[in-house]
Image (tube, rainbow, N blue to C red; front, side, top):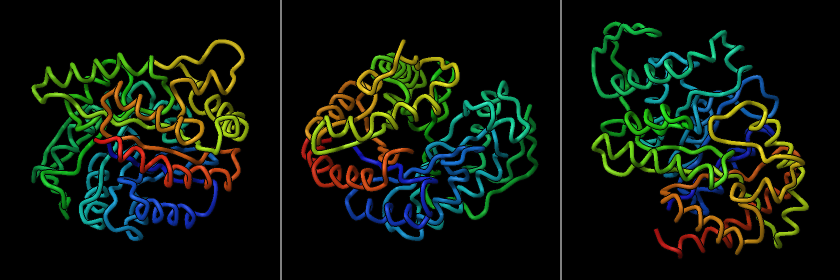
Length: 328
């Protein structure tokens, strides 16, 4: 299983994010992921621009968007900018895309949230053609392209991998049909994830492509003891999930009923505790979902930067080597 890092975003100068990415590569992480949010005082937009800066400070680590909100862009622009990132990085881009879920983000661009699925479907199909064909012409519901050829071409052949963030059944089937992996967000617990994973693998089998690849995004907080982790991160985790994930209806994720405690929130959802506990939890997720890639985020608004840095350091020194020893 490969291990990725979702680094510090929006809570400090971008130089700190770049240094964190440099340390992650030196420590043996396999990938770095930048997300995308708008109208948000904490999280960054424009992940492809951010990855260009990361590419200039790293050498071999894979660079991913986790995830780029494709319905907010014209596919030609994403194809061109993605090809540039792939060229600048020497062929390291993984393009993670999703439909988005926050009404205020679509309102900022003047787009209808109701059209996000059809815009993603058409945009992704067009993106695949733009990266693998020349002189592409397309007249669809949302996009019109005449005789377009992307130059420079991506370094990776036939194209960079495309991972889909998806939850509802039609979206999961789209991921199986058009993508190279299903990229699972951090909000669902294991009970909610398992039937989605089975659906995705079944849908991949129906396309004739065999078993699909599953990548999981999780929040992680490591401390010298589980109680210390709960004390340091409990309140900020609750606030973050309430403000970022439980505000809107979700096709799969359900907020635990009643007063939310960190123990109830973290159960089967957040990797939280001492190093041995975190290794055990990650191993369980890997086996239950047949994970091929785990992306970890250590920075959470409200947790002091020093505590997040200590958590990442403990993960690097004690959790990451144990996961490597545990095998693929």
